[in-house]
View 1 (tube, rainbow, N blue to C red):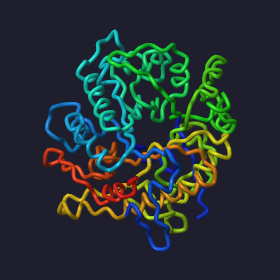
View 2 (view 1 turned 120 degrees about the horizontal axis):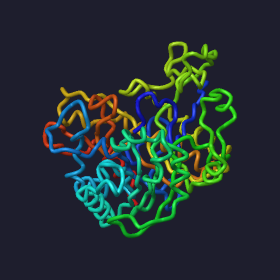
View 3 (view 1 turned 30 degrees about the vertical axis):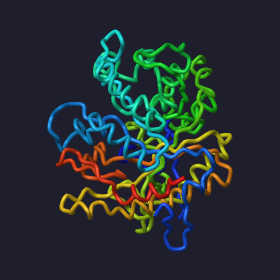
Length: 417
């Protein structure tokens, strides 16, 4: 999930666009047409998404409100999670492999956590057994501390050869909002058989500063705004980057208004000032759309279509997978369980966003799949457990039991073949 503050649209090697807004399975709101799986092109993939730290236990400690050590405990409950996906009719599951879980010291020479490898093999086996395609994200914010200490993480090119994927999955999304040069190095390295894995069928998604993958250089506007603080690609890196992708992975949650800001005084230039724009969800006292639980998330489904068509029209209509799309509600601990399962706002959110996406597809956008965020309630980074993004409710106080929300029933009907 995008962190709070990842306003507008964010997504895949990072597909972040600012939408300058100057405005049941067959559920439909007033005046809105019903849609279902059958409304989409044949072979279109529907799935749900998660990330390792947000849903998988990494310790045997009791549940704590302040971190993701236990979270939804998918580490132990993965078979139930796969059963839930299958019961809903999902075609695919996007999950991340935690580098720290399988290589605690960051490299093969530093030792392999065989239990971690076994877990991911078991998860993939269970998915394939149930006919659910694995879509694997290789980096979703968790890097080994040893590599942070030794190389300062991704600030050093020395980390790149260590980050070489091997996959049993149908698709691999290499980096969640990560490093473009890392993406290039990965694609240039010779294939080697990964430990504990067999078949290799990798598709590379862009998840970071993605424009150079089309143009082999940073955008002119970025070069002008950032100046000599902007790292430069070597000739070799530029050659590796250009066209080094198979599809775009695109996340969309919300949209913001933007207005111009004057240049800073030069003393405090940073990532946050480089855009020279102020982003807000409210203009003249009127929000761009209804606000969800997270303060950055305003519901603006029409922006979804605009974003997808922008990519189509400006970047040669690449293959796109929607890798995240979802909305949260407040985690109200006083609600009885049956009330907590009533998430009609989420149903309306998905219905309207899928309508918007379908409109873009009918206008020619080459979108091949859609992943809802998220399968389960989870640990939401800065928001912790104060919000819930899940289609399925997780009872953190009762052994992480799963309960389908109304939106899960809606998806089940929507996905009927």
